[in-house]
Length: 412
Image 1: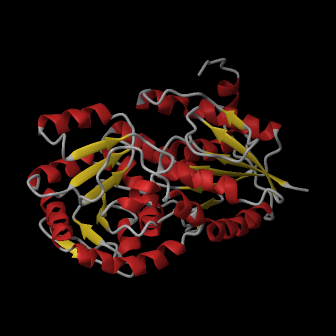
Image 2: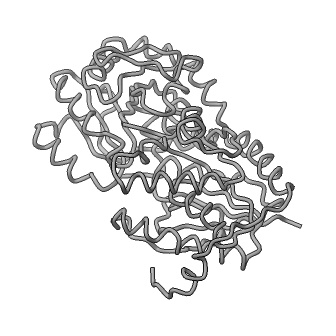
Image 3: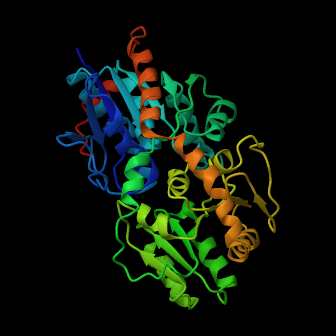
């Protein structure tokens, strides 16, 4: 008899973690598992298996306040626990911070399924003690995450932060982000319809327009070297799109920086560009760098927490600090100081001056990208899922507030 498992995340709108979920939905063995998909938002941008039924525990507004999000957590946890009980779910595998909080908190409301959580972002970036509200959120995170049977971060840096900084005591296992290499190599050949001249040196960034992606650093760096012959493509969508366009216009960079709408096939841009740039304040483990490698595209990345150093300079210390005015030529690409315009400008100038040296990264990058083949990762994850499915039953946590939430009648 097939085991019943839930894949739970916020949405399947464009993003690296969302693409990871979509890849897993495709690659997990459905002869072994009945896979239920639970979301919190109706945006679905990625292709999922035909006939996959989606259950929404809410249909949230992405613009709702952080306070409202926090207040809703126990109500959603109660609702999620009830859904799992009704469908006899044996294991929950959740992705992203809020779903992870809800899935683990659901144990307060009688959830008996095993809970595995995948942390896809550098947790300290979201949780700190700089206010009473944030201290409460951090306390809640520690209480909830510690109840997971296993935490599966996608980077060594995030695992170290959860285990050593937050002191969360549970099982840990590093799981790489699954990447559909064959599909990427097929899709990268697709024709581009926009009138973009790729004969010009082309820097590329693909990311949601959110604060942590730090697009402003990229724009400022371009302004510093605006007299050189190149262009920058910014591919994506998000809350800051109009604000960033206004900045580009104000700086007179309209001819230098080209905005391209989000697409489910960013690989055609990766394949034709000259160099990828990642500028984020923080990441989990940026899928886009793996995808750039598979598309033979050289990389410049800020050395943010977490992922870029693990991928581009494996074997080096995660505590390495790059001076604000320098950059590092690593094994698989260039690393810059975090949020340092001088460092990024130096790396971009080096790339423009040494296009032939950029090609030296190609052979190594292809081998490195192959480590993330989605079937290899899915097989590894399947072993972990089976391990916890076959382990002893878990006891639900008692919660004196359970009946209050269940009987409150609050409309979320």
